[in-house]
Amino acid sequence: MTVNDLLRGRTAGYRRVLSRRDFRLLWLGSSVSLVGDGMTFVALTWLVLSQPDGVRRLELLAVCYTLPVFAGGLLSGPVLDRFDKRYVLAADSVIRGAAMASIPVMSALGEVPAALPFVVAAVYGLFKMVPLAGFPAAIPDLVPEEDLDVANALESLGFSLAGVVGPALGGLLIAGFGGEAVLAFDAVSFALFAAAALAVRRPLTPGAHDGAAAPGARDGAAAPGARDGAARPSGLRTLRDRALVATTLAFMAFNVAMGMLLVAGPWLAATRLPGGPQTLGLLLAALATGELAGAALAGTGAGRRRPVRAIAVVQLVAATGFLGLLAAPHLLGVAAGYLVIGMFSAPMTIWAQSLRMARIPAPLRGRGFALLRTLMQATPPLGAAIVTPLLAAGTLAPPVLIMTLVAGVPALVLLAMTGRGRARSRPDDHPGVRREEI
Image 1 (cartoon, rainbow, N blue to C red):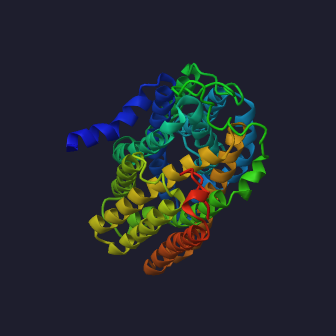
Image 2 (tube, rainbow, N blue to C red; image 1 turned 60 degrees about the horizontal axis):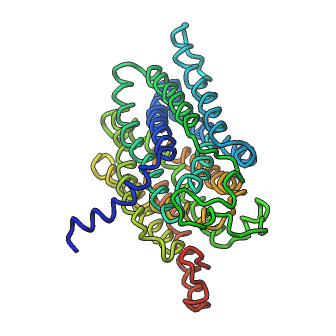
């Protein structure tokens, strides 16, 4: 087999999934909206930093971005399982787009109230779980089961591409046009996502495809999640699945470290590194570039055989990337750390998402994804609260060490658990590669 044959084999799945109109529309709409989101984070951060005592206010901004995710996640799951996901995604985009537009509108009318960036961040966080749970919950209705890894990789690639373009472009546009113009662009991107969701032809209502073949599936093959028949556990029974619980706890710990990075990155750009907002944009772009590379490789199915163990390994490597922050004031070293974090955290998301799709029944995917992702997304405020006093005191090494340990130790625990599980069971006890037990 030649190198060209290998490359064609690896890209065939991506071409096949993107040939599906409805998935392509939803993915493109989501990706455009994410570009706006990447620009918005830089814009809001810089608006807050420009306020008196801006460094300390970054903690409040990070909390507003992340803490409402918990309440929003608990509400969004039942809504996604009850109503057509196309309309739920469109309604979310309209609401958050209006929130983003409020800042440029107030600026045009005279002056932006000091509290408004925090209100906008809170609205963003409250509805953030709608697309984070809604898009992956819709994927099994849009692609056949054998293409789930590829579709999940494309979702992660959309995040990563947007993360490369959004922050870097946002930093440049802030310098030339101001943060208000960046927020106006995000409002437009939300409108485009709403239009894309409404243009999807296939109904995305739970139960609409039960008993029918998934798109592109073999004749007679049931839709993913419909094969369990009468086994319809409640949403909370998701927490009884040891593999889902263990990986979710490891993700929660990693996201505590990422919450610390939400504050540490702007602090470094403002106090230790040259370049100001452009430097912050470049650091976030380095993170997203790593995610892009990691997602592209993860989509080839490298983690299929033992996904829980594979997740633990890449999380452990990603944890070492936090040590790159110690390279400050050398931008290249810090950016390399961001790159490593992104490159090895992306496969975590992709492989865990495929694991959840295989283990959560179709009628519960909205609630299952909302519950698990809410638990993971609700932890960054803890990291922000821990690291802010340390950074405000001017210290760097202690918070970096804390980030590394918080992200890495749970991965070591997960590795140990998978090792014990393998020792207790024979290989033929669990023939399904996605049913790994720990």
